[in-house]
Length: 189
Image (cartoon, rainbow, N blue to C red; front, side, top):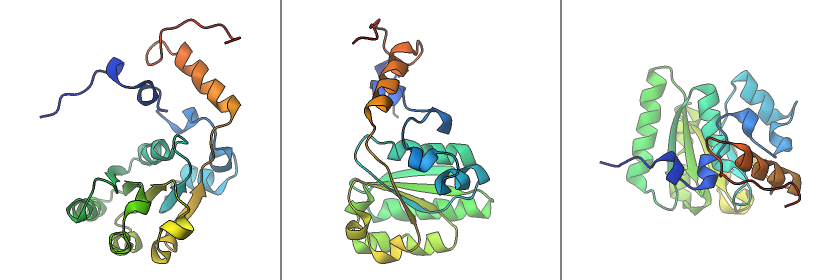
């Protein structure tokens, strides 16, 4: 039995994680008006994708929000911590969900850590629509992922947040009475 962590005890980044797409800061190349990613999202046309970018750019958050926005089931695995048994269970859940007309987003964090055989395990389920694979990686997908997987997913590049985005996030954390920090700081700081 796991006890849930009180909201106030969670790290600030987790407490301030966007709750919907409109709260996401930065990444205009993905979320800006008239981008392929944004159009697919708003039209509900989910497709498998690889989110490539440095740590802290919102890869995990975007995957979670995609599932929430589209009411898809969300399964998250870490390639560092997961093995064949976990992959099989996730794929089975995707098959079951599809039989009940429900989409499944299978999010694989650090997908570049999976070997070729592990990456190949997703191909059939991707082709059959049993899962929508969202992989997150900090490594260049052209070198870190196999061609068969890349041919079935679209690669989106996330960029480091610029200074304006970071300032916006800091202000949000300072001004949010529910999830933020309880500090008063002048704008000069």
